[in-house]
Length: 106
Image 1 (cartoon, rainbow, N blue to C red):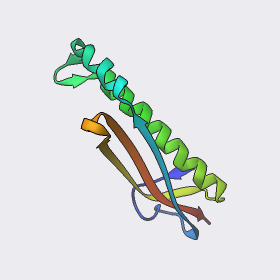
Image 2: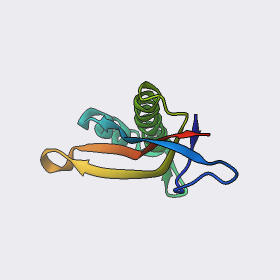
Image 3: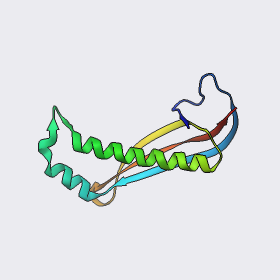
Image 4: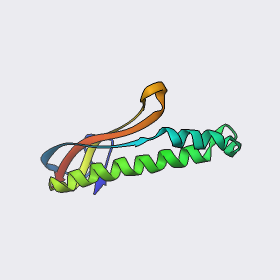
């Protein structure tokens, strides 16, 4: 499945718009505690453990979105938007949300 943040895919024609598709993943509070407990993992202002967890959440969200698009018969998703939000009591969880338009390229 082709994925793009742009509204079109160069060299391809969109033959059918299938609808908006989304994917979401939430990182729980225990992940944040575990990551901050391992603060020694931070090198040069970056936390490898934190980045790894965000990447995993992003992969889950993208996987859900692609699955929804496949169920609609799409072979591409255009106009993809990625959002990160802190949610829950005291901002104890982080949500990764992706959305886009499922299309058929023809």
